[in-house]
Length: 388
Image 1 (tube, helix red, strand yellow):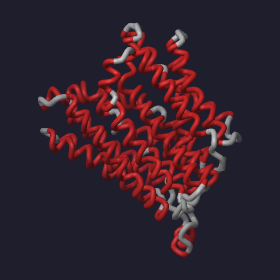
Image 2 (cartoon, one colour):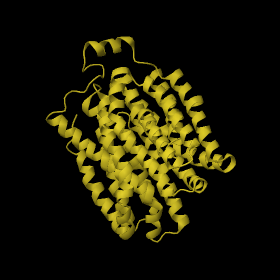
Image 3 (cartoon, rainbow, N blue to C red):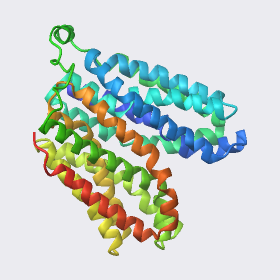
Image 4 (tube, rainbow, N blue to C red):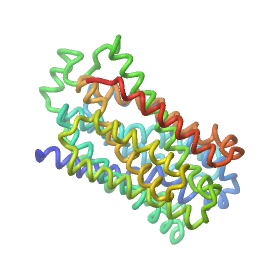
């Protein structure tokens, strides 16, 4: 592993863990307290987060194109500034209007600064050699919940939610921004010059998506989008569904708590043992683990089997989001392709838990898991025809 690869993995990985901790985990740790403080419905406040995902999805293709043209460093710098502004607006919110304005700004910042932008930055710098750095970033980024949940809860309890958000804004400006300025290099001057002279090279624009390339892109988009929908459904409804299977509240929480370590464990295994494997092979393995987990739960296996299989599948999925498009389509226009893939992905994350909530609330939990099993099998088949 080169020094640049190692530097990018550590710097961007730490920044990603902090970026997710100070954005994605705000609803889980603060919405109840904020709802009581502002005398607003928690559902209304959670809608702001869903709205931010929609905004991020709509911004993602433009972010990808900008990274292809100019490299990722300017985008990651701007992301820290925009996200800190969104957090300051959130801290100042006294009603629903400013709350949604703040989440709109945060949606733009998240599109500019979270995983897809980070992967695009690495791909723009390293090309086909990006995989080790991407795996390293996902490994460190997997600790976001370890940082976000306890830190957010502690700050709200001891300082109040407005001060907690000010601390998060300070993390963006005082930690993430300096990391990006110090450790993420710009694209080389000759790279930028060749990009202007020869569009379509040096990562500026992807080759036309026609014929087999278009079919491969559609299959990949369907796979990532439906997997994102499943992930968001489980993230929001897991405790309720497990409890309706007959588990005690403590048992449901324990089972769900295994998912995070399983995600990190899968990334460690990939880091140590799968560097030489074809990214398509590791993606197949990760995809297969998802229906195995659902089938184990429905079949009466210990719930921990489901949590471990599901978590490991998600851990590999995050790596695949960065490595599989590079493997299939090459480095040219890599960031643009990631932006296009991120749009339906983020829209699915925003919409699926809410749209399916009435159905999940009325069907037996075993039926819901059986439905997710069927979808996971079908969506895994999207990877079978893919070739480089």
